[in-house]
Amino acid sequence: MTSIVPSARLVGLLQGRGPVLVLTGAGVSQESGIATFRDASGIWEGIDPMQVATPRAFAADPEFVWRFYDARRAQAATVEPNPAHHAVAAIEATGRTFLLATQNVDGLHERAGSRSLVRLHGSLWRLRCTRCGDEHEDLRPKLAPLPPHCAACGGMLRPGVVWFEEPLPMIEFARAERAAREAELVFVVGTSSLVYPAASLQTVGVSSGGYVVEINPVRTPFSDDASEHLSGPAGVVLPALLKAAGIPMDRAA
Ligand code: APR
Image 1 (cartoon, helix red, strand yellow):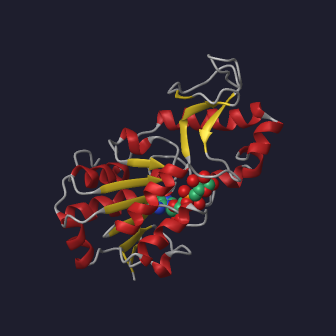
Image 2 (cartoon, rainbow, N blue to C red):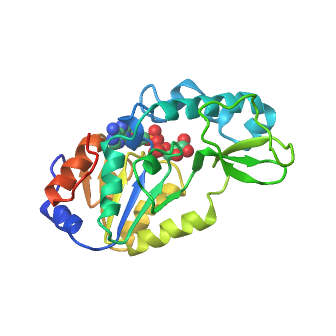
Image 3 (cartoon, rainbow, N blue to C red):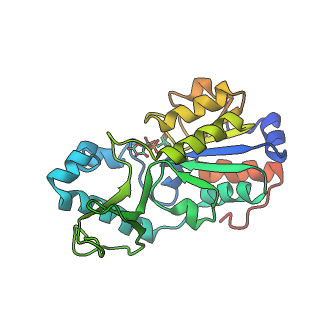
């Protein structure tokens, strides 16, 4: 069922105390001004992901790959979380059993106050040494020179993100999968549900008996399996849903 108005059942579940899992993709950052990947004028329209988001691309031209990620870091540093990010943090703040599993690497959920989260695809703000494996957070909006090197061993650093052809972090994915099995209510927000294994989590939610709500302006390959599809931008739909459920948002605007 596609609607712009949440069902009474959804509002009731959101007012309840059952476990909630929120799955997000690039669409949740779109209203902050960060392009998604596959929409019109999306990131992958302008550049071939195989040229910048695979281990082979990095091995072939680390400086080219680093220029792509350095530009994304610089942009993410200039934008702010939007009401969708704040709404997700507000659901967590109710104190119910909650997990956010995000495919996003921009750090906006964390800046909006989300704490109970797993980063399925890593983070733009983490760097990992290709020689000694040291991984650390570096919040500088611009890195220079590119590619950066490890202070400990001098090895070349890589972005701490998961590239195509790489496995997801096992512990984080297992935690998200368990949450999908146990959740009474699952939100699938701003993702095309095209990239696996992250996109399998919503199906685990459905098969485990959860009420799975997709929030997206358009339908996706998952939409037919969703319990409910709320058609609209997350930064509008989520705050309206929280208002209907009487859940306060400290930073709606
Ligand atoms: N609110 C909610 N959804 C939105 C909004 C919005 N304001 N704007 C766009 N969307 C939806 C689009 O309709 C689309 O379904 O967000 C989705 C974005 O899809 P993608 O661009 O494919 O992004 P995502 O699903 O996160 O991609 C998954 O692919 O390239 C890899 O690693 C990358 O994590 C990424 C993964």
